[in-house]
Amino acid sequence: MRNMRNMRNMRNIRNMRNMRNMRNIRNMRNIRNVRNMRNMRNIRNMRNIRNVRNMRNMRNVRNVRNDMRNMRNIRNMRNMRNIRNVRNMRNMRNIRNMRNVRNMRNMRNIRNMRNMRNIRNMRNMRNIRNMRNIRHMRNMRNMRNIRNMRNIRNVRNMRNMRNMRNIRNMRNVRNMRNMRNIRNMRNIRNMRNIRNVRNMRNIRNMRNIRNMRNIRNMRNVRNMRK
Image (cartoon, rainbow, N blue to C red):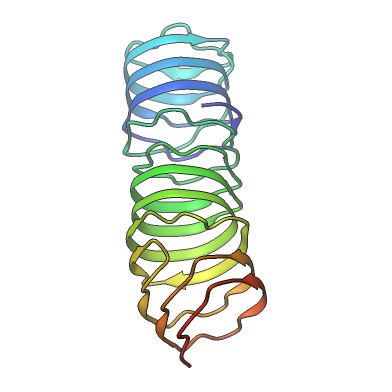
């Protein structure tokens, strides 16, 4: 994990490897099997940490209990709960309230992420706020400024979704695969500044879509009903 700042509410973290340059981490509890953590500063209230190996350059650690060795330079990590099997987390800044996140890379400015389970291979996601109940999201790259996404389940193989910025208030989206044959998308409001959306085919029954502005470069969009 490289370049992670302002991470709060991290609990029950297991199998975390390759964590470097983590600052502002507070209240880390129940951390097991943490390997290769370097450049961590100012970590407070870390309890129940087991099997921590190769943690170097950690300074200003307060209230560290239960087997913390060789941890230097960790700062301000607060209240991260139920994070298991987090590997190769790099370039993550300003992440708060992240639970059950797996294999997330290059995520910056993420706030208020709750109940995220089974998220794999998420790269280059910036400015994501208020994402709740997101399950089974794989292969999502280059998504920026996504706010208020709730109740998204079973999202698989979302590829060719690049350069999506400023998406707000997306709720109740289920079973989205390959961005094709998407039906029954209702109550989607406040979608603004969506650019470079490709390979969206056979979209039916899109109702109650309000405030869609600044949509550019939408290719292969067929069968869109009002």
